[in-house]
Length: 145
Image (tube, rainbow, N blue to C red; front, side, top):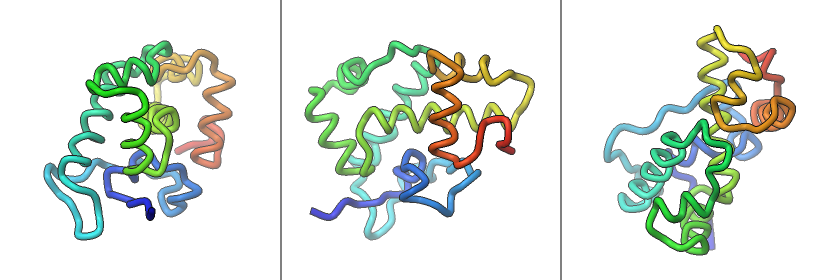
């Protein structure tokens, strides 16, 4: 089965799958915009709903995949299957990437320390945040502009 790479998924795909996005924060597509070899409208709605749920719980480091699946009104197995088939990433990577992309926005705005940003986007420790950020963006948070 070939995984589809939709526009919406670009907001959560790791850079290894999407290298041209280095140092860029991908905007969500316009409402209802689906390209020919992209995803169905219902899959796009599912991803948008998942993004909304994660963003509403962004600062909660205890927000789990179980919580997300409950908020999405589906079993954890169904959520895993759907998110993986649409984005190519596991639900935990999906959540982490949403958190890291929000952190990148906050870094660009300035005014907050790395520790404050890590806390604000739901990472328990600044060191894990820094390690995850570097893995996704290829640079340390302090070097990101």
